[in-house]
Length: 95
Image 1 (cartoon, rainbow, N blue to C red):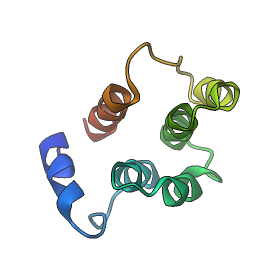
Image 2 (cartoon, one colour):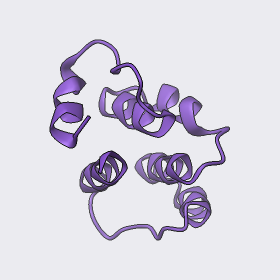
Image 3 (cartoon, rainbow, N blue to C red):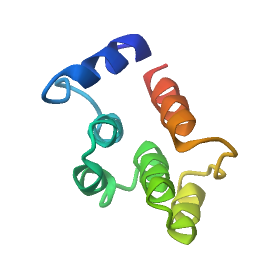
């Protein structure tokens, strides 16, 4: 699946089958389901999940927690909107 297909899937009632937990969490977040997105990645230890976990806390506005998860993902909090960040993460995970 590429980014265009992933983005188009946001209009569907459920996430596409076969997505990673990190991509499923991004899909859920984009569909207004922050809690479900957080639940999807919070217990995962892989780097993509940590990155999405960081992003979710950035969206939430809890920057100390976001920064902790950015560190676990070996990323820095970006200097852009969370909408732009969502797109950057999704594109990176789909490449």
